[in-house]
Each structure stands twice: as structure tokens, then as C-alpha cells.
Length: 270
Image (cartoon, rainbow, N blue to C red; front, side, top):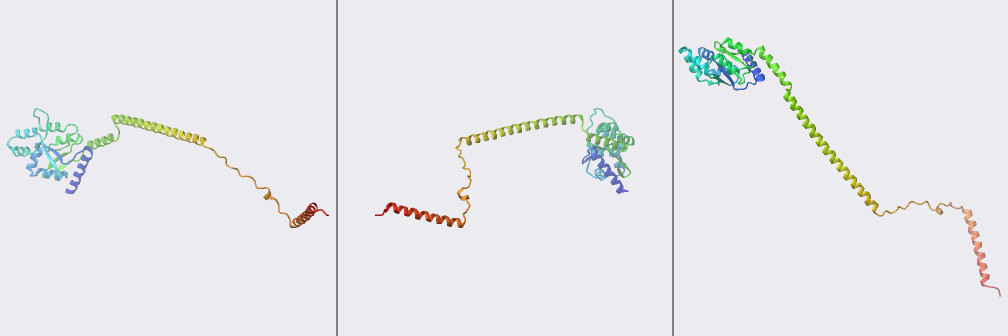
């Protein structure tokens, strides 16, 4: 039974920490009935008993109206009054003194902004807090302390709150539109700057090419010699051996006749 109770308490604490933002050390707001129950059943020290119940360190609070109510009950609650005076006093903004129930309801409010655990033995007060989101309730049974399970209303409120967190509000949607416009304008500026740079680069390249063309025109241009055809003499066919011998013989006879003629001219007969 003790192990099951601890698991149930740990599960409830995880629910409140995850869905409603409770953080360690947990703050516990006690009324006079709970303080009197602790002393009557000898559940001391109270901070260690509550820390074992929640599985985390705690800070115990009470209000001035609770102290005033215990004071009004007489000597039978003097020990409870002395014990409650040692607790941390929570701030209650009302000027006139109220009953302990009304004071605690004012401190908790509609959404429990200070993230208090409420420790009370009042059954009606416990039922009221089940209808307020994010208000865990602790109560005592003999010499044991219990943390109530989250009510169905608190579970439904946590689901709806989680769904609302997943969707954007109107303000967030407007902010997103403004950011998109800024990003688009910056991208357009960057693209225009890049295009201008590219235009200037292309113009520089074209001017350089024109300069190079002008320089090449100014320079002296030499005509390259074209390859001529082959030598026609080198393309003649070779003569046969018979023709060459005849030609050589005829050439020899011609030479002999010319020689004899020349001799006759230069050497006449006597």
C-alpha cells in the first residue's frame, strides 16, 4: 500500500509540475485545521513529513488571518497557534481580517499564481479547490498524509491549455508577418546588389576585351606563307635504260661532228 501511495503521489506531482509550472522547493499553504491535525497525531517535524509525501523539499506558509482565527479559538488551540507562528507568513492584501477560508481563497485566486499546495482538513474547501485549475490539495488521515488526485476539471483544463499553446495567437501571427516582410525586403536588396555587381563585372570584362582587340589591330600583322605545290621537275617519271643509252650515243656523235667542224675552221689545209 505504501509503495502504491508513493507512486500515486509522484504521478500527481509530475502532472502539476508539467502542466502548471510547479517547481522545487514546493510551497505549502496551511490553515489552522491542518496544523492542529499535525500536532494531534504527532506528525512532526512537519516539513520532513510533507517532503516525504511530495518527494521534494518544501516551504510551509500560513496567513495572518489563520493566526487570528487560532487565537480566537482559545487556550485549546494555543499549541497550534505557537506552531503556526513559526511558519512563514504569506502575503494577504486585504486590510480587514477575514475568515481563514476566505483568506486562503483570496491568496489562491482564480489561477494560483504563486503555485501553492493547500494543506487543509476542511472537506468543503477541498471540493472548492478541485474546481480551480492548478491547486493541489494535501490532507491528513490519522498519522498519514495524502495528496489528492487531480480532478477531471484540472485534466481538461490542462489539455485545452496545451492545445492553445500549440496554436499561434493573433499577436504572434502579426509578428510573424512583420518578420516575413523584413526578410523578403532584405533578400530583395541583397539580390539587387548582387545583380548590380554582376552587371559591373560584365561591363569590365567587355571593356577589357575591346581594349585587347584594339591593341591587336594596332600591332604589325605578318602574313603567313602558304604552302606551295610540289616542284614539277621532281614529279617527272624516270626514263628507261634503253632510251638513256641511245640518247647518250646520239649525244656522243653530235659532239664528235662539232669537234671535227671546229678543227676544220681553225685549221685549214695548206
